Amino acid sequence: MYVSRWLKKWIWAVCLCLVIVISCGAYIIWIGKEDNVQTNYVINQVRIKVNDMMLFLEENHKTIATDATLQQNLLKMSENSGARLLFAQLDGRVIFNSAPETKVQTIDLRTSLHYDLYDSKVDKDLFKIAFPVINPETQTQIGNAIFTLPAALVIPKQSHHALLFTLLLMVTCLLLVFILLWFLRRKINNDTIRPIQKLKYYSEAILKGDYEHKAEYGRMDEIGEVYAMFEQMRLEIIHLNKRRDEQDKAQKELVSNLSHELKTPLTTINAYLEAIRAGICPDMESVMEYIQVMQTNTHKMTVLLDDLLLHALKELGQISVHRTEQYSKEILLQILKPMGHNVRTSGIIFIEPAEIPNVLINVDANRLEQVISNLIANALKHTSPGDSIRISIEQELERLIITISDTGKGILPQDMPFIFERYFKGHAGGGAAKAKNEGSGLGLSICKYIIEAHKGSISFKSTPGQGTTFYFSIPLC
Image (cartoon, rainbow, N blue to C red; front, side, top):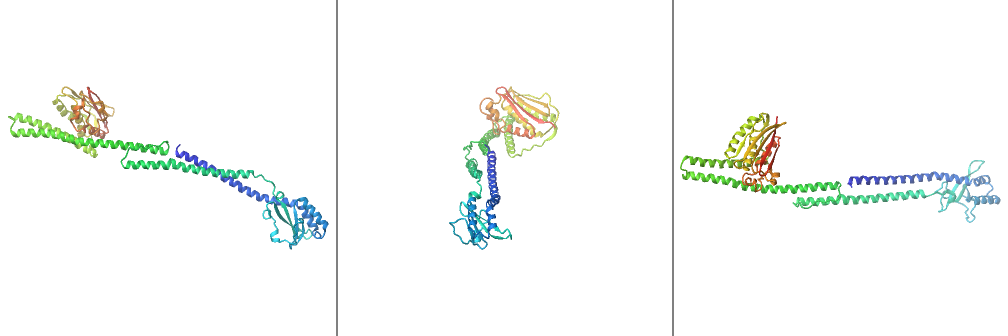
C-alpha cells in the first residue's frame, strides 16, 4: 500500500479516537454538573423528610429543654425518620440530642454547622446537614437543628455503569492512540527510513564507480517508485559508461586506422616522387601517369581529413548549416554531373535521375553535396565493376525524396542497426569486408547529422548480395 494512503487511514483512525476521548471527557464533565444540580435536589428532599421535626421544634422551642414528654416525642420522630437530631441555641448550647451515647453540652458553631451536602460529610456513610430554627412569632432565628443522616437517605442510588463504560472507552481509545503511534513509528522506520538508508548506500556505491549493486525494494509504493527510477538511472549509467568505453576504443582505433590510411598514400606519393626524381620515367607520358597516381592518393587523404574535420565539428556542435531558398533542379544537376563522371571512371554504371522536380527548397548546397558525395562513396565501397548506382529524385507531399541505390553486395544484417553510428565500419565478411578496410566510419554519421539539421530524415534498406538503397528527404519551402 502507498504510504500516503496508509497515512490517510491512520490519521482518520487517530482523529476518531480523539473525538471519542473528547466526547467521553465532555460526558464526564456534564455528569459532574448534574451532580451539582442533584445536590440541591437532595437537600430539598432532606428538608421535606425532617420537616415534621423542624415544625415541632419551632412550636415547642421554649419548653423543649425542660419537658421530658416533648423530648420523648421528638426522639421517636427522630427514630422514625432515621435521622439523628441535635438542637443547639445560637450560643452553641445543646438543648436536645437524639444520640444518648453522645454527651455534648456545647458545640462550636463555626465547625459544626453545614448548610450544604458535601462539606457536611463526617465519615464514609454519614452526613450532617444543618437547618436554622425560626421563631414563628418573631420570625427570628433562635437556634440550629443539625441532622445526621445515613448516606443512603441523603444520596439516591445511582447506576455507575454508564460512567464506568465511559471511562473504559476513554482508556481504550487512548491505548489505541498509543498503539497507532507505535505502528506509525514502525511504518516510518521500516518503509521510509531504512529504504532511504539503503538507497544512500547504493548512491555511495555509484559515486565510487561500483554500478553492479542492484537497488531492490519489495513493494510498489512511493519509495518503490523512487527505487525503480534509481534502478533505471543505474542501468542508464552502465549503458552510458559502456558506450563511452566503446567510443574511446573506437576513437583509438580511428586514430590508428587514419594513421595507417594516411601513411599508405603518403608512402605511395613519396615513392613516385623518388622515382621521378631518379629519372626512372622515360617520357612525359610516364610522368603524367605517376602524377595521376599521386593525385588519386592525395584526393583520398583529402577525403579522410575532411571527414575527420566534419566529425570534430559535429562533436563540438559547430558544423555550420547555412540554408537558403533555392530551386532544386539547378543545385542537384551541379552536384550530380561531376559525381557521375567519377563513378563511371571506376567501371560502375551510373544511372542519372530521369527527371528532377524543380521545386523551392531551403538547403545548404555545400552540405547537401557532402551528403550525396558520402552516400555515393559508400556505394562505391560496396560495388564492383559492372554493378550500377542509380539516383532518383521525387516530390512527395511536402518533401523532396532523394534515393541512391546500388546493386552491390549489400550490408550484413548484424551491421544494419549501427550503420549511422560514428566510427562504425562494419564487420568482416560479405560486402562489408571491403568497407572495413577503407574509410573512417564517420561518413554516414555526418550525413545523418546534416539531414536532420535540414529538418529532414534519412533511412535505408539493404539485402545482402543484392544491394543497398538510401533515402533522405528535404522539406519543401
